Amino acid sequence: MLIAQISDTHLALDTPDADRRRADFAAVVADINALDPAPDLIVHSGDIVHNGLAEEYAEARAILERAQAPVYAMAGNKDERGNLSAAFSADGYFDPGSDFIQYAVEGHPVRLVMLDTVSISSNKGDFCARRIEELHRLIGADPVRPVAVFLHHPPFEVLVGPERMHFESQEVMSRLCDALRQSGRVSALFCGHVHRPTEGHVGDIPVTVATAVATTLRKGDYPAQMEGRPIYYLHRFDPSGGATTETRVAGG
Image (cartoon, rainbow, N blue to C red; front, top):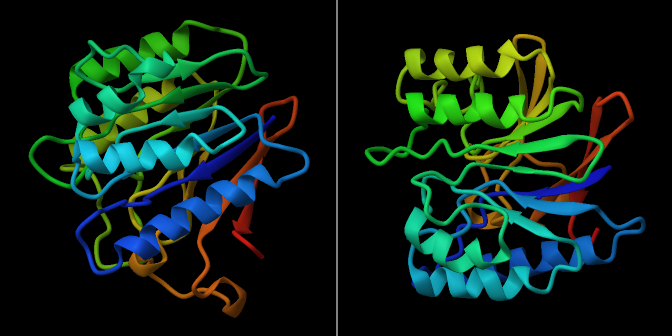
């Protein structure tokens, strides 16, 4: 199974770099379309747009409709759930009537669970009791296949960058981590949000954090061949559920 992950495109219509963000987003989709073998699906792990506006989602939707693989959208802290839902719910993979954009992707050797870590009060992550209950339901619905979980905010202390904690409190983050470990079948976690690549663990579960597709918003240092080029990730799963990740440079 092959998954392409893109994150933090922050599409905007009113910023000085709006054209660059749009071009970076489009370049990544075009690069994914050229892959051989093609990915089974594409996951956008949040911050699709920058201001949560319906007009921004219309632009993002137009770019993602060029993708040849199925696309699954998630919410980040810059996304607005109502407008995101209006833009993508017609694709049928999540319930537009739900308060949270959480769902599972079926039909593959590894079951994918998409979580909503958006807080209504800050840019940091939240995960309330209702979302915990839904997480248990999503993981427990299939007791056989391994599970990979996508969420926007990294659920561990990120040791690079100005902030270490990306949830509203240690208690909230610990509650989520306990729920992720409980089943024993979560094989990998994939995140975004911090605009730099990094890795970590939740117990013995490996966590891969994707950098921002928007090159003007990236943080950290990058090799020369990546400078000025948008980056995305390919996650390959073997039959046992283990994952390996490749960093891809669009147009490289």
